[in-house]
Length: 596
Image 1 (tube, rainbow, N blue to C red):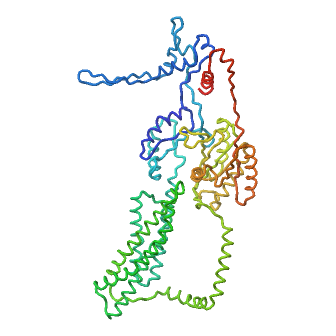
Image 2 (cartoon, one colour):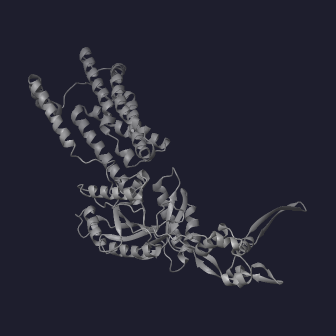
Image 3 (cartoon, rainbow, N blue to C red):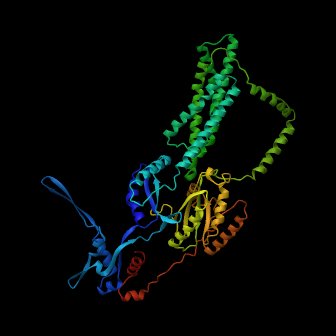
């Protein structure tokens, strides 16, 4: 209970003050409560009811505002606070009088400090802990909010009571930073490759340099648009940018400008003046505007339907579509404004329309093949059709997935027990799971959440646990060449020795993502609908057997929908009527006696 008190009264209020944090969801520990345990025999002897006892507690634990009083030009706010502050005050509350003698709560019940009837627990490394989850406000940047929460927690840690520690157990900032570094690396390599190709193919150093400038400038314009439209830079948005498409319009206009400049110089037999270059470049750019617009419009049209997606799919792919459209529009604006202007200014002196060595070499290979294809067009068409049919056959053997799986560098295991398993038993079984997983040298630590947290943002029954396995960097593994799939297989083999558990292995973000999309934690789910539970269960088991034969399928489980033990209390209406009681009176006493 002390850990939960520290969480609720020291850590939570300070973290809630961090910008972008909507709240802190706590799970684990016990919420400290004052418990009043009535003695039924004493209640009967003094002729008091449960309802009278509850009413006395409620009426003596109130705070009331009584309005204002004006006195000598001043306004006083009147309030009366009679809320209970100490355990001893509860026992002194008067329930009623008997023969002129006040009967207090301490005369009818035992008063003490107790613990809540909790619905969830948290553990780490085989011991109970309290876990707080920072919930982010909609529209905030997860990377900056996570970093701010981590920094605030570091400051809070220094003020905690002796013997109490607080640490971050799951922080997605490292994954986000690693992903952004990968995107930056890929973008830089892609831009460099496109620039090298431009220099190799255009045959004019200055023209290639001007064309290459379209890449950083279009990215700058795209980033400005992303800021204005509140699109974050992430794997989906930036990873879809194709620099080849960005410079496509610029290459067309640059080549046409060079061709027209060389032709005009050849006609006049002298270098062109600036005014003449501007005139030629303007005409060349105007000539290519229509095909440039047409080409960019076709590509943009492909991405527009993505903007109609809704739900989780829309949130995933809208940034990608908008970023690509912004990049293409930016590149088009540059290709018809900046590029022609730079050509007119920078391409001076004698201009020749020459072919690079790469183009000449490619033509030497291509021309014989083109002549043969035209001469033997019937055979070429048949060969092409056969290749197309063969590709269709091969395509049927390819696997399909909604999006490629991102390696989150951690593991999530969904542990399930039979319905009816109590929270205490489930937590004890989870201790064994964590100790088993923590023995692997690749694991830093493992922590779990069992049941439902305080805010019920992720409701689960007490027989279900989410286990998060934090892994070391691969360079610190005993065998860095081993992939994570093999590690998961070894973990499954070790956990099979623990009776009473069933597992589904996935990744933390992937598990939540699957829940948002389909309401399940696995990658694929089959939902069976019907009116008869017995028939539905039989059908589900048959489906599971069939799916078990599918190559690559793993962790196939049928969710149990029955077996939860229930104790029914039937009220004898004839008996309660003799005492003048209603069903609600009996149920109220039952609820208080069992649930508090």
